[in-house]
Every structure is written in C-alpha cells, then in structure tokens.
Amino acid sequence: MSRSAPSSPPRREPTRWLLIWPVVGLTLIVLGAVWLEASAPEVEVQDRRVEGVPPLALEGDRSCTRQGDDALRDDLRRAFPSGGRVASTQVFACPSAFDGRRVTYVGEAIGDLLVRDGGAWLQVNDDIYALEVGPLVGHREQDGFNTGMSVWLPDGLHEQITGLGRPGQRGTVILVHGTLFQADPDDGGGITVRAEELEVLAEPLAIEDPLHVPQLIVAIVLALAATGSVLWSRRAARRR
Figure (cartoon, rainbow, N blue to C red):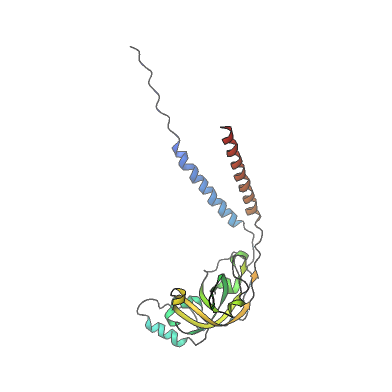
C-alpha cells in the first residue's frame, strides 16, 4: 500500500506587513507635515496696531461665573463706568456684571454679515490678531486664541462695513457704542452688543502670504503621482 507524501503546511500571508505599511505611511506623512511647517519662510511679526483704540475701563478678567460670586459681580458693576470700553474676555468671565450696561466695544468684523429686517448680525473679534498683529497668514506667530462677541448693527450702521476678516485679510475694524445683553432673545439667548453708534477705526487690510517653495514642490509631486496612479489603473483595467 503506497503512502502519499505529506502535504506542506499552507503558506501564511505576511499579515504583519499589512499592519506595518500603514504605520510607516502615516509616520512619513506626519514627518513630512512637520518638515513643511519647519521649512516655512521666515517672516517678521509686523506691528499692525490699530490707532484710536481707547483703553479698557477695567483691568484684567475677573471670573464670577460660579455660584456665590454675587459680591464680585456687584463690585464690577460699580467699578465699570457707563460707556466704558470692555473686552470680550471680561464679559465671558462675568457676563452678569455687564448685562444691560452701556459699553464701548472695539474689534474686527469677521465671517459673514447676516442682513435681517432692520439691521444685520456680525461677529466682531477683539483679540491681538484683530487689533495688533493681523491674521496668522502674515506672520504665523501664535499669541492666544480668537475671541469676540456678536454685535447687532441697525440699518444705517452695517453699511459702513466694507470688508470682512478671513485668512488673507483683516476686516474692517470698528468701534461701537451700545448696550450689552447677557442673553439676547433675538440672538438665541447669546451675549450680544446692540450697537447704537459706529466708528470705523481701520479699513480692510489684505495680508500677503509669502511663497512656500517646498510646499509648492511637494504639491506638484503629489499631483503628478496621483495622476500617474489613475492613468496606470485605467490602463491595467483595459488589459484585463
């Protein structure tokens, strides 16, 4: 009785490479992104400080958002002069201290101008990028976060907004006098400054982004590689 030769064990697929290659690819992508960021052209932070901005009526941001801070809220209300300039960070730290008060607010018009019956809604930022150094595109120096408030501009005021802030442009910088509401029902219960007067402190300013040559080269190479991959896959499909 003849014996059949023992069969060889089934060949295992190199599954470990199926796991390694994605990790290697992801690592290369991350390293490439870091290299591109590090090789960005050096630019100096330019002082684009807006002239004519009045000083803040109060110094610092004192928080009274916890229960039991009524005394601090009352102190702020007494210390804040009617019509004084307020920062958005101060309002968010203790909104009840400024509710219903007349305020002066200065900032950059950004985003979209939402025109409605009788006026328009506008987001106005008063951070360092809006009032001092301009958009990140021009300098890439991070200094805090974007901060701002919603402003209602009645008809006759919002028409003075000639440009809105975006990555390549600083929008119209405005100074408004109006009343601040902690929970404006027409703004979905949000914090709003309802403006009564408006003054333009600075017109829109376009910011030129310097050419990033390595980034341009990488983009061209990747575009050519993607195009070549598509053409190769179509040619292989026709041969089948």
